Image (tube, rainbow, N blue to C red; front, side, top):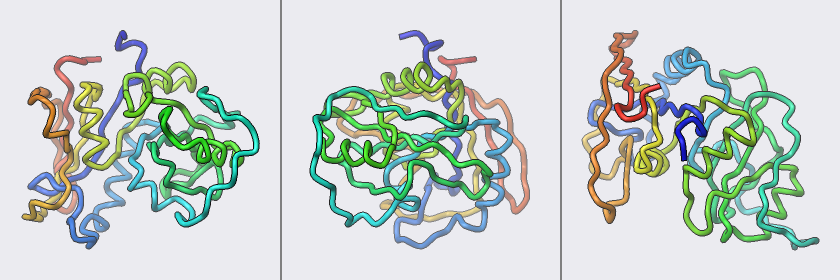
Length: 241
């Protein structure tokens, strides 16, 4: 698959000095920097995001809502509803965990509603796919059991016409996409904090059962921001655009 068939993927995150993205205890340590984070996010000129399931729980409905019974046959084809604008948010949910009030969500720093698209697999419960259809929520298949992100990003470009997408996942989502060498750029806000806990999630958390393959990036920009924050920008050496 040619890189031209995929959108430009920018991982935009903020971490502590020891590379942590949360405290690991439930205590929110990043809120004081969120407005600065979104200010930098706006400079990246993206209108679409891919975010992990755990993070998206903040935008979801009550998770205890039961799924309705299937009223018609559900096939294994992507389900894409009419898209009213250029803003989209993609999230993974292969087990059918999240519930939704609507087929759009709102970000605090974006005026427009974002179209919601769920990334599923062939093994995702058909009851959940039926539920998404009832809610008029788009979904795309990313594989049979596990997600193949090359397939996902190819669909994101071909079916939605998206040329640039921001990856703002948790460590597992970021690590999975990094493992497939799909990240073109990293935009990182380095915060003047240290968590010092081994159980706090890191920026990238790959599968320890897989072979060690080091990914190399080139530093392209460094800028000191307010509150002792440093903005670092890196370019993937293999995917220069």
